[in-house]
Image 1 (cartoon, rainbow, N blue to C red):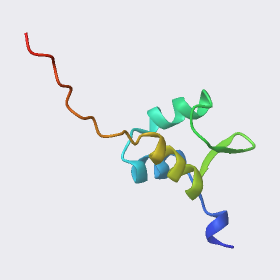
Image 2: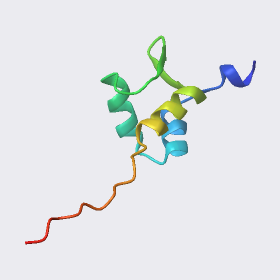
Image 3: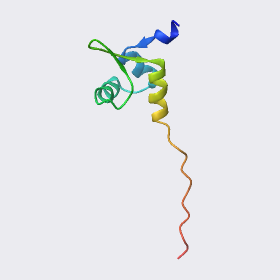
Image 4: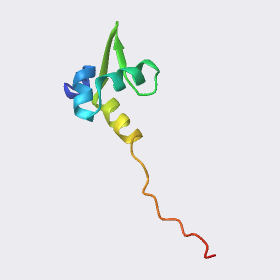
Length: 69
């Protein structure tokens, strides 16, 4: 249960995600990433960080075949 209650500050979360803290705060303020507000304090759970990381995943691009001229 203790790990379920682990919350990270924006600075800690940004370090774990290897992004700038300002990037994370901006997106949290726009509700573009999952987060928790405890009063006025912004926090991120481990589940939030997993979702944020998954949102950044991109599919592999396959090369396009151009028709011969």
